[in-house]
Image (cartoon, rainbow, N blue to C red; front, side, top):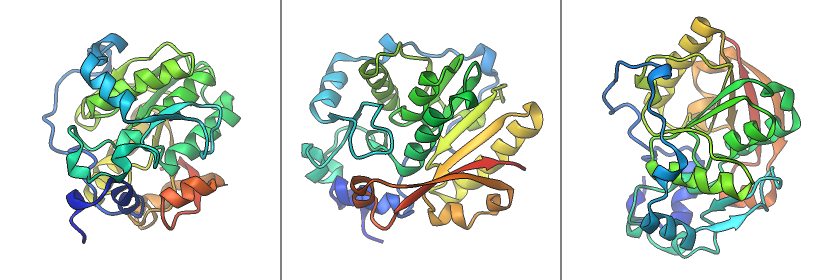
Length: 268
């Protein structure tokens, strides 16, 4: 495998999109906590907007709504027009900005929620591995009563706040802790896209989703473009295909080898 830290970000993104074990986050290394969802200290929008980091994010991302399955949603993303798309990844001063890419699984989920607002209207929704927050934003646009965006990268939390504002939404709560290690909470719907990129994470995530389903009857929707860690996982026996989308040409180009993305209903 090529040493990922020496790749340009554009090359690194393509490597990740094809299913390489890129270090998106240490989901299994955080210490568990004893509190459940009702006791979470969710951070508010203002706590994420450190002026220096905010300025860096704004200077090194592009506001765009083109080239994705959801032109209704504006996002701050890392694109080929940005300097760091072409710079070596190790020159980026913060943790890897996987939040700055609108991944194919997230695109499919967001498109599905926008087209089927009854799925979220009046319901509580957890966007697991939220990244740029597009799927959480789509849920809010669809009339979700309660939305929580969860991503372990604090800068992803900032990106979600900025992206909410781009779309005329008041930022919703954001949790930057490893939710897999926390007491399970009751949600009507959990959505997750592009999270089956690592075998170990896939196993932990599968067990957690089963527990959510059997404990609370939580519905789970998964978006994925067919990465090998997902296509070859035993979770395939518990999925019902809802819809498959052909990815727009720009997304295909940025995700070398991936042409479609599918939304799955998890039915253990």
